[in-house]
Image 1 (cartoon, helix red, strand yellow):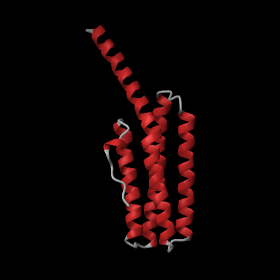
Image 2 (tube, helix red, strand yellow):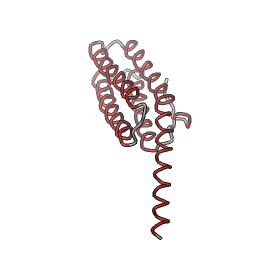
Image 3 (cartoon, one colour):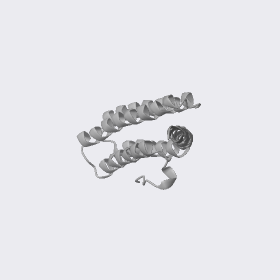
Image 4 (tube, rainbow, N blue to C red):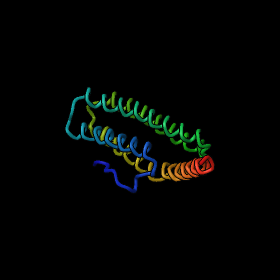
Length: 149
């Protein structure tokens, strides 16, 4: 089962939404590789890329959280750590059971559920916070610009 990007997954912050779309595409590639019976090398490649890109994405989110003093940063980072640990477990299980497609599909479905829930709840809260901070920053810039004219 594929994940489809819909507006209700949008957090309203373009940089994060774009990365979420990429992550969804990677997860869908993982599912497709399993469903189409692709070889172990292909499946491992997708899982490795998912691991790498997830870490890049989390670093981006955490950069914004740090920059804007996000009040729930500890909770959010804890959720990120849980997923990184889960992907490490996923890699291990997939590599040691590469021919067990049912196990890999079950893991892939768990991963999809985690992402959709994380984006739909935790990241939406972050997105709302970042939109407010961005609007505040823009208002300050506009006031400064008006004052300098």
